[in-house]
Length: 123
Image 1 (cartoon, rainbow, N blue to C red):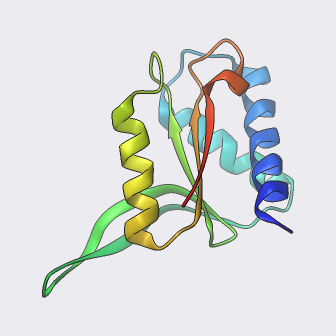
Image 2 (cartoon, one colour):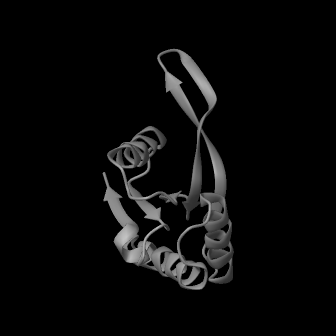
Image 3 (cartoon, rainbow, N blue to C red):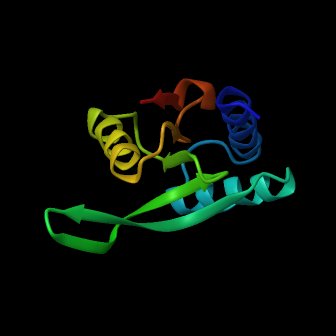
């Protein structure tokens, strides 16, 4: 399955969660429910995955944690804020760059329509 097919399936799972719950809950709730939907749809994922970061000669074993990593290649960052901020964009792009991932989704569930809160990134 190509990157776009995978992102469409993940966005579809997010839309299912958003339709059921709506906006206004904590990120942790949306993340848990998104992972449930991914599982229901047979989509392989890892949740709260620690990623090591190398800084010069130092290796930080738990440099950061990905909210969700789908099929070992698609980074999904779950948000539930008023809007997507430039900081959120910088965060997911940094995670992708440091982790060596090419594709990412920023999903902000605190929007009237989830489609308005989703951004896809490719590097």
